Image (cartoon, rainbow, N blue to C red; front, top):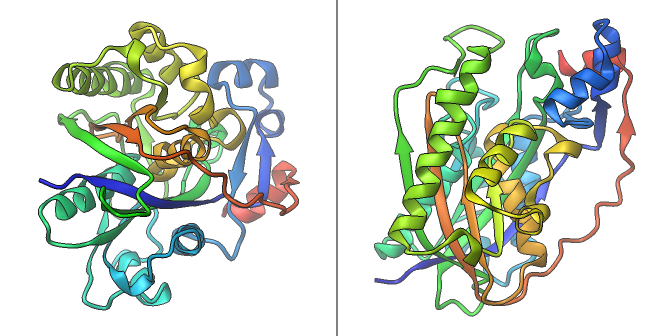
Amino acid sequence: MTKSAIISFGRYLPRYRIKSAEIAAHWGKDPKLIEGSSGIREKTVAGKDEDSFTMAFEAAKIALEHTPIKPTEISACFVGSESHPYAVKPTSAMLVQALELDPFSHAADLEFACKAGTSGMQIVDSMIRAGQIQYGLAVGTDRAQARPGDALEYTSAAGAAALILGPEKSSSALCRIEKTLSFTTDTPDFWRAQGEKYPSHAGRFTGEPGYLAHVREALSGVLEICAIKPTNIDHVILHMPNSKFPLKIAKEFGFTKEQMQLGFIVSVIGNTYSACSPIGLTYVLEKAKKSETILMVSYGSGAGSDAFLMTMLRDGSPLPPDEREVVNLSYSEYHALAV
C-alpha cells in the first residue's frame, strides 16, 4: 500500500501581537506570575478583517506557491477549526473555489477542538493510501475565543497552517507519514455550548485527565506500534496550550531540548488551537534534514490525541521570510480587535 507524504506546507500568522504582561496589567494581575504560569510572553491577534477562512487561504496559498503541483490536481480539502466564520456554510467549500482546486473535491469542515487540523491530515492520508485521491489539502486554522479576564485570554491566539499531501513516490515528496493513530475518550475538560460566544473549561482538570493523559497514551501507543525509542526521534512537536504541559510530557519520555526546540513556538505566538500542532510542524519541516524522524502529537479537548511518526525524504527548505512589521498592541487596542 502506498504511503502518503507531505508535499508542501504553508503557515499564516497575523501581524498583531499582545504581550501577556499587557493583559495582566489591565486586570491588575502580577505580569511575572501570569507569564511564569503559562510560559507565554506574547500571542498573535487577528485583525478586524481576518477570520479562520482568510488565514486558511493565506497559508494554503503559500503551500501552493512552493510546489509544482497544480491546484486542479488537489481533489480533497478538509479544514479543522473551532472558529469557522459561518455556523452553516463550509469553510472548505470556500477554499476549494478561492484556491481554484478541482471542483470534484471531497470537502468538509472538521471540529475536534485543537486537534481538528491533524484530523484533516489523517483523513487525507487515508484517502491517498486507499488510492482514492492523488493529492489533498489539510488545514488547521483558528481565531481562538476567550472570555475577557479568563485564563484563556493569555493564551488563545490566531493563525493557520496548511499541508498538501500526496503519494510518497511523488517527485515533490518532502516528508513521509509512517504511522498515525488516535486515542479518544469522553473527557469534558473544555466546551462551548451552541449559541455561547466564549468557551468554558474545567480549570486544572485540563491537565489530568485531559491533555496529559491523552497525549501520554497516544505517544506511548505510536512508539510501541512503530517499535521506536524516544532517543531515536530527531524532532518532537506536542500540542502547546501553554509551555508547561508539553514540557512535562517531554520530561516524562526523556525528550531533550534539542528534540523539542524547532517546533516549540508557543511562547511567542500563543495557542493557535486547531493550527497549533501543524504550525509547530511547519517550523520543523523548514529545517529538518533528509532521513530525520519527526513525532507529532496533537490534543483536542473533549478529548483526544492524534499521533504521527514521519520521516524526512529530503532536506527541508524555509518559507519566505515574513517581512510584515509586528505590531504590539495595548490592551485597549487588543480588545477593539478581539471583539
